[in-house]
Image (cartoon, rainbow, N blue to C red; front, side, top):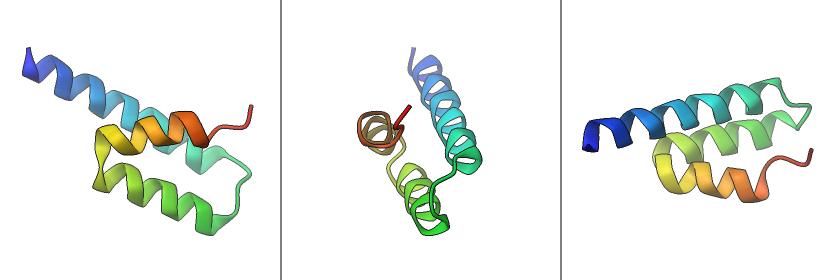
Length: 55
């Protein structure tokens, strides 16, 4: 069960990082989001999901 959770978080983080890199945001903001997601995988993804995408 924990392996499935870890894989799910990893997939979500990779998805978020790809979306961040492809976005039109400033380079500094991109670095900050990627750093946050790498530092805090679950919390970083959830913060990005709430505060990040403007679509």
